[in-house]
Image (cartoon, rainbow, N blue to C red; front, side, top):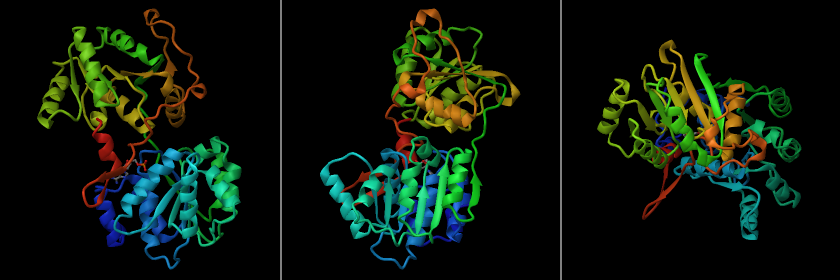
Amino acid sequence: MDFQSFGLDQRVMDGIEAMQYDTPTPVQEQVIPEIIKGHDIIACAQTGTGKTAAFLIPIINKLLQSQVQEKVKVLVIVPTRELAVQISQQMEGFSYFAGTSSIPIYGGGTGAVYSNEKKALTSGVDMVVCTPGRMISHLNLGYVDLSSLEFLVLDEADRMLDMGFFDDIMKIISYIPNKRQSLLFSATMPPKIREMGRKILNKPKEINIGISMPPEQIRQEAYVLFEEQKPALVNYLTGDDKMKSILIFSDTKVGVKQLSRSLKSKGLDVEEIHSDLQQSEREAVMNRFKSKQLRILVATDIISRGIDVEDIDLVINYDVPNDAEDYVHRIGRTARAGAHGKACTLIGTKEQRKFASIEKLLGKQVEKTRPPEGIGKTPDYSPESYKPDNRGHGFGKPGFRKDKNRRKPFSGRKAKDSAR
Ligand code: AMP
């Protein structure tokens, strides 16, 4: 399937091309036609599946047919300011040729930011992407007119409920017309989300894009430690001679280079793969690893999907991957073809929350192994007590590259790839 088959307006197609999306993801394949038909949607889809574009593309297409002028027509409610900014940026990219407008509205910021938001809300921006609290502040002041709203989107609904936003969301909804198209996206589908869906949605179509679970033969372990203890633990894990073939993932190419240098300095048989290498160099390294002439390979996620190397004994996640899907893909590199394998994830304190959300999606706790004595005292596993790091989530943030005469959208996936 390609985007052409959705019968979209040429201006939307041009936006999709400018964002460099060639093929719809599964969630886009399922969601886009239903939104175009006018159905309400309740979709179980995680970050990283392409869910944002799944609702933005058909909404922009429909906005092009809307008769309503200079009124807010789309309200997207999200849990965090990061997500609000990220969605608005994608909206800007897709709207480049369609000319539809949007603004993120979130807490914090100066008085000038607040005035800007007020101006956009009163002059009728097409789409508002808001966090609940900030939207309520604007609504309370009486100048926001949501009477012409055509689309309501709740994104990461489970996270919003976890953060205690239920009442705020219902209050915002009390300001908008009942006749509207509503879309609810959630990474998980606990009963309270279904209950909320029953209150907000009208005969919704259910769409379920589950993540594939890791095979049972993979023994999953995790080590809870301080970031600075990670190199010593990797030395310990790679020191096990029974592990003949080891693949280590790090989030960034800088991380890969540092780790590979440090392991080489210990006399280990190590090479690296990341986007700074030529394709031919990558293939040569990969071949040595596949044919077992190379024992340890350190890599970014560029090889986490699709590579088929048999008999990898151990996969080490030096960093906690950004989402559950990346986790499943990475650890799936071991235990191929029914063999048994082991996957160890190193969880720094700032990564505890991220790992807890992966466990939530996996539907189980990963066994926490106590690091060897020599590593020193380690922290407890207490995800609620540690702040997440600032690396964002999903495939990274889309953005804009400024050239001399015009801003050109480019896709988030490309942005992230450049770090790999
Ligand atoms: P999301 O799940 O909406 O956070 O999307 C994850 C990432 O995938 C974003 O960086 C998008 O730019 C990218 N993405 C979504 N759909 C596609 C697609 N069809 N082709 C290429 N990249 C995509």
